[in-house]
Structures are given as structure tokens and as C-alpha cells.
Image (tube, rainbow, N blue to C red; front, side):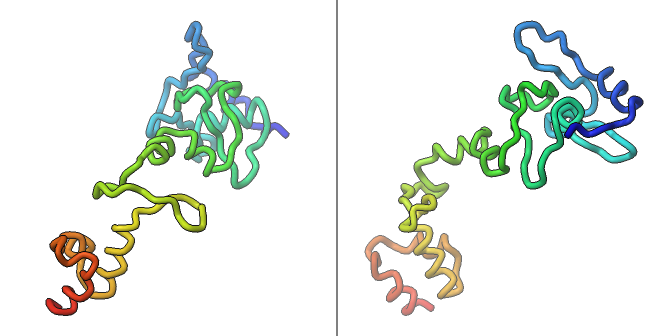
Length: 162
């Protein structure tokens, strides 16, 4: 069911949309923006412009779901460029999700391994170091910087120096 807004808000909204981007099909929001997304006040409540357009022209957005810009243009308010998805799907489709998914090594340079339960991936050396760091009350960096000659006997070395 389409949300019903006062004509005053609808008219004010459409004055701030540029539908003339030839060949692209995006309806560009040309007013206030936050992090690239168009923003719009309705009854002193700040809402995202693409959500306003979608709820005005298409349907309400179910609780727990969000809108994904298929065109990857955050300021686009064209409902044909927007799809309702779960938050996790939205992250996977976005650049942040893609960048995270494509990483093969942890920030410290170790190769990622698949988790035993199949739910994702992990860095085994950093995971072991975090365990030992908590156990001995030192930083992960301290554990990882122990000399290679103490591998895998880092525990014995830490017992001697602690």
C-alpha cells in the first residue's frame, strides 16, 4: 500500500528532482544530501529522499528491510532503480561488501582460512595470537612479534618472560 503524504510535501519534493539526465535514467536529487543520499524533511522529520519517492510511488517498505540502489547512485530517487532487500544483501551488493569479500589476507598480511563451521573466513595466526594475548594480558602485536625461534612454543616463552 502506497504511503499517503500531503500534497504540500509531494510538490516540494518533486521541485528538487532532476529527471533530465539523458541516457542514464537516474532521477537526481538536487537538494540536501547526507553521505551522498538525498535528505528531505516531512513534518520536521528528516527522511531519505529515495525512501520518500519509493513509498510515494510504489509501496511501503517492510520493517527490517532496506532499499538498494541498483544504479549505485545514492542521490537517485527513481523507484525503477531501487529494490527492497535485506540489510545483509545490501551490504554484500555495495562496495564495502565487495571489498571485504574480495580480500584474501588479513590487515597483518596473513592469508584467510575458511571457518570450520563454513560461516565465513578467519585469520588463524591472529586468532591464536588474540587468545594468547588475552591469556597473558599482553597485546596481539606482542605475541605476533615474538621471535620465530619460539614458534610454536610461544607459550613457553611467554611463561618465562611474564
